Length: 85
Figure (tube, rainbow, N blue to C red):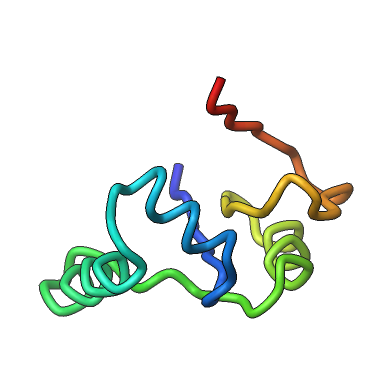
């Protein structure tokens, strides 16, 4: 099934996620998605300014996934926890 990936804007949680899980800087991450768009291999993920906006959009979009900090309110969506331990 198709997965729709959403990201956060220039929040600290975005920077940490990108560095830790993609091994890229936020600028490299943006450049990757721009290349995907330019070559016709993908679309740039929609980005949200707040975790609340991201969670609300995920709750309304079938097959979507995103990331938030552990302190975010996520009552309306399923949670997959990633631990460094």
